[in-house]
Image: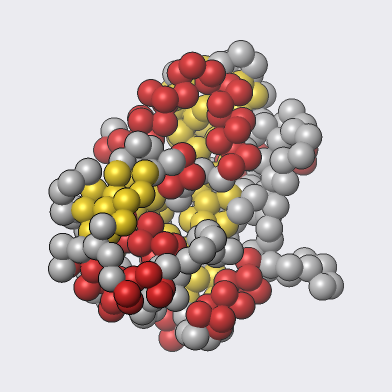
Amino acid sequence: MLNFTITESDHCRSVESFLRNLLPTAPSAYLGKLIRGGHLAVNGKRPLSGTLLVSGDTVTLKESSRTLELMATARPSLDILFEDERIVVVNKPPGLPVHRTAEDELTLVDEAERFLAQRGTPVKLRPVNRLDRGTSGATIFAKSATSAGIFGRFVKETGLGKLYLAIADGKLQAEGTIDAPLEGKESQTHFRTLFQGAGAALVLVTPITGRMHQIRKHLALTGHPVRGDRRYRGTPLAGYPGHCLHAFQVSFVHPETGEEIVIHAPLPPGLRSQLHQLAGDFIAPLLLLLPTLSQQ
């Protein structure tokens, strides 16, 4: 058996995503076969579909020549959170734009298409949701024009369930809803403080409406900008490529299968580092709280 201990880099990652990143060139059918066939266990038990891994978990995988052949020697350049025939959801790093804004600029679309082509499954990707350059987290891409149309209409009519994590400057109240028009339109953002530290807080943010830069603007309007968000007067962070705002969870009912899809995006290294500085000795219980956020 092959044994793996889950670290913070895979905390709140689905077991399917972990296996996909462990065997990045493996066909989806093979990955499904490993899980359904009982070849993989988490803490000695067969996992359910969508099981979230947490730091300290032990994952065991039955060893075979095929598995060893497909196993990556290093973490893949593209962090795939979910994939099917229609879409691929990736964990966008901070500082990388989804679309090109300058000549010869590397984008998430470029990186994802290059990775999928090298894997032997070339596609032209079209974003279903977009994150700002400095924001990290779950980003959905359609694999064809047809899929883009299907998911585009679905998002416009039904929307996506979204949960963000942010480190915001100052001392925040326990919970509240920011109700302030943006772009001349009604705009609402709900937040809940998960941890209050010295000079900043970790907050769970739910955008009720969807305006450009809504979370960043709303937090700044209350005097609590996202840390690292220079555009909206957040405390600068030396060496951090973006700001401390992370699309932690996205959920939707698949428009074709009717299945409820809930996707979590592990925190990027820089944000984890900021969280360690903020929470100190409280980091362990704080991280253990994250998998339960969507249930509260």
